[in-house]
View 1: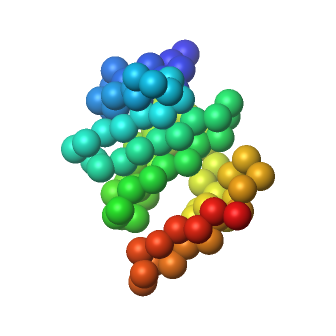
View 2: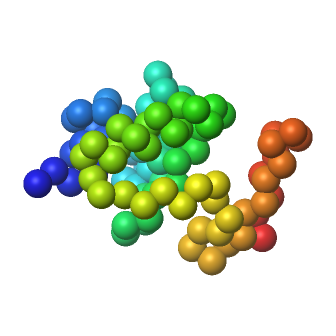
Length: 89
């Protein structure tokens, strides 16, 4: 069975951030993924691209899409799409 890191790097062409081996990026898709154990945060400026990418990941893994992030690792996330801003509490 493939691991998430193998799929991201070898099949989906993500790069691993050298200073942090739990952050992946893909410049073509303009997506950043933060991984903590079995939780993923997928960040990008285009929601359609992220939705499409999640569908691709579901082809490899059984995933649960929790929608827009509300909190992550005990940090509350508040975002304003119109202002293009994110606040962490």
